[in-house]
Length: 399
Image 1 (spheres, one colour):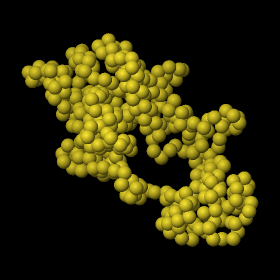
Image 2 (spheres, rainbow, N blue to C red):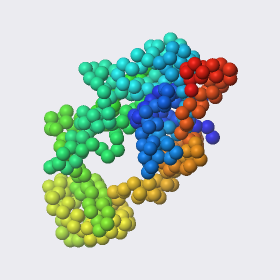
Image 3 (tube, rainbow, N blue to C red):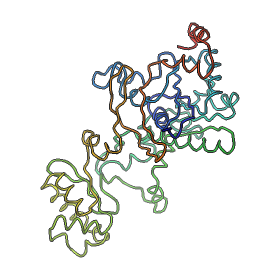
Image 4 (tube, one colour):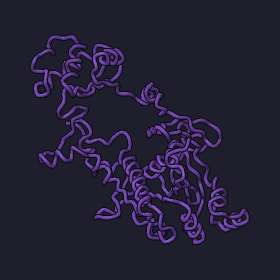
């Protein structure tokens, strides 16, 4: 079974997280992903590479995960012959993706204007902290900078505590995901116009977009949202609660969910008519949250999950990684997969969340060794002879 992006060829110039995550998703969906690396390899190869707990045969967890389903070609883009070879390669590909710092693509000669001279159908995508326009365009950025400037940190944490970043690097990952969206949109546009275009993705823009309805609420009310911990600004009970062993989430939104919760608890003080609708529950939120916390603390998490499910009360455990990655639902959806290291070792990692009815054949090739596909790509895609490749290698153009 073919994959949805089969027949699409992408050059991956990315490093670290936002860019490699974007290209990983596209590679999982079937794009041929040719990772063009500089001498010594891109920086992600070195992350955790010497950590005995988080690496396999000199490959750290970052590189192992983010670079599955990719090929590696070593080209020195700072060498004039290397750049000329790269331009030749770009005549045979659809998309070039990078997350270089501001101005770097133009300095290297791999920006859209330069590449489109060699291939008018080329699509380029740059993922940066602040985008390519505006007063902050030339500022460097990392995940937490995007999270902080994007507003999300200001509402994460407890009212009397400091603002907290999200536990997962949503600044980087958000930029990568919107990069995927941009690439797919540009591909679809090219079907109609026959022309390529440039995609300018800002990590900060992504964070602002993710504020969504909360930003609209601010514009409507003029009120700045504050940190609420795990509670909700309208619904009660909607929070995390401690059981005898683990934390549990109870999320009552509809009045029917409240009736189910009261029936499950079977305590008279929560059967007040005032609590039957949201306004009454909100008015009495401190009492309700206290009582729900007291009751849930008396039994185990699994006991409550089973009982509340029978009463159709929205609930879930707060899973640590061990519980999340062994969850029956997660495993049933093939969201934990085995990926080989080039040396043969098996590494487990998250799978592909995009499930398509006709073109969703999940396969995961090993992350590549540095330059392992240089000869194959130059030969099969560019028609270079063995002697020509050997000459380029001797001159330090490729490796």
